[in-house]
Image 1: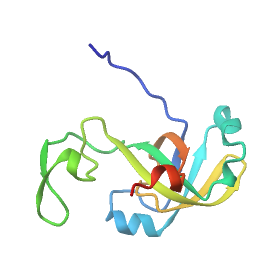
Image 2: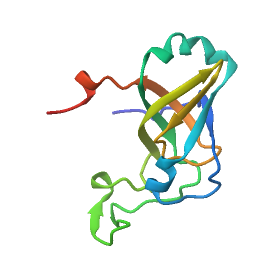
Image 3: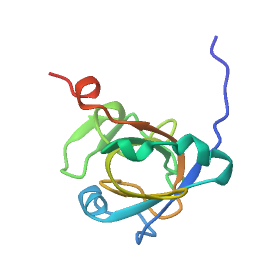
Length: 132
């Protein structure tokens, strides 16, 4: 039996979006990933990566349905769409790293709103992460 477990954020998102928006609009804007000071050393040489995978927590999402309507109007299972209404409220975006300034990462392509807790960051490696 798998036990429940806890996750703690490593930082949060800063951007202009206070509420949910069209994911494509969110991805067009720049966002800043603000990493808490105790995790700053974990950013060592992160700027050697062009792209990052960011795991985050949909902190304003409430509830979920196993089948739901997508923004295009068709019905899909929660695991077959990118809805923020998920059993564990975890989001994932691959983003372009534009700049690092100490514990702040300027990125493009994130579909998360202002204040979103960041759970983890990993380098996105084309040869490993791209599927053929």
